[in-house]
Length: 356
Image (cartoon, rainbow, N blue to C red; front, side, top):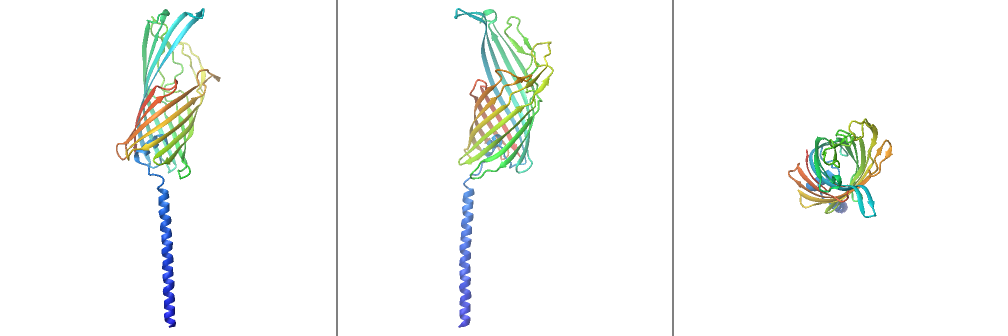
């Protein structure tokens, strides 16, 4: 009887332990399932959305990527110039001219990116520009019938730059993905200072145009900022804030009068840029996005003196569509519509990022 009692006790303890273990296993399984469900609250990013974020933010999931970009910008300006005075508050006496400027800028940019660590990415950008500008003026000798025009064009290297991006904080349920960006731009393009303004039509002295067009700023610059991305199923929200500072530089000639040197120091005004946008994935390969970008330009300085009318504010509304051509190659298109008088009328861009 005593042996049976001991055996019964041992069996009871074994059954109790098995039941307890089963309860713990069920609790662990429930906990794992809960964690998986919590992780799945953030939808997986499709290839199409990642291609958008590669342009607006930074992705650290590939060691190397190369991108070939193309953009076309068009602008036109018209200006009525009066040289004289009003008699009796109604009759204008003097010279009248109407000046028009139309410009087209085609930029081809090669970008290489290297993800050094899961948090650090380096990139190099080299642009090549083709610019053509048409100058038109009419109104010589008080006549609005006399019209003259000429085209100036140039193709050359633009200002190359090198930058880095560092992930400060990864995205979770309560905060966005935060990346710090910095960039240094070198004046590898043709500078816009010291370009002579000449008269090209002897019959119309109103038409005066530059001998050549610039392809760069002529100054070193440094920029820094942050970009943020937050997943909110089914959308992905992104924003960025950037600041650019231009360093002063002395030039042997900053004037526009032929055969006359005018040395001086130039410093362009600091620039602030804010952009906001949202992207949606239609399917695995196709997505579209909307964004708005606004820039503020402070006054430029010549010989440490601020120049009036050199500050500006631009606003651009952007529409974008991306399509994954292959697993590694995508096509990113964008259309920017200028909303202020200082902005290009429109800008169309195509980029082809290839991620290794």
